[in-house]
Amino acid sequence: MKKILLALAFAALMVSGVASANNAAVVIMGSSCGVLDGNGGFAIAQNTHSVRTNSANGNAMFACKTDVEPPVSGKAVTYSFESTGQTCGLATIDGFVSTENWHETVSAKGKVTLVCHAP
Image (tube, rainbow, N blue to C red; front, side, top):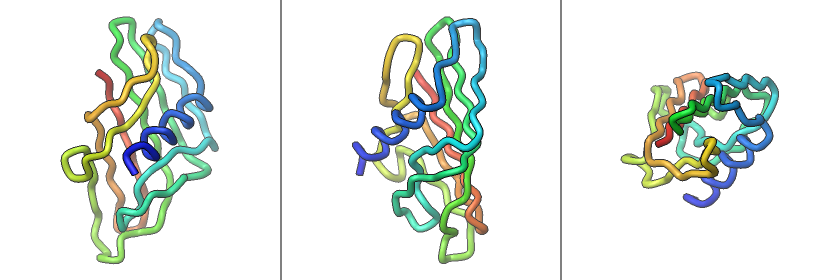
């Protein structure tokens, strides 16, 4: 599962383009990214809103918003490296990195926000 999340986040980043070192943000509508659904299952989200940034000092951020299957509990859930042991992969100006610095929130209605930071 770790490698799947990592690989799909990477694939989504490659589709969404690379922000240049001038701190530009790349916003992509309608791409896809790998996320966890409201019940912890892996989902390839379609029709997403993704934002990718890079800075000259090597910091990078990837955010993906979409809809998935909502939690059966009817309550919002959050995921992170601490709760799943999974990493998030993203491309930086220095190349592809795997990071433990990520979090995802799935609302009670299945609205997802995934954010990955590097370094």
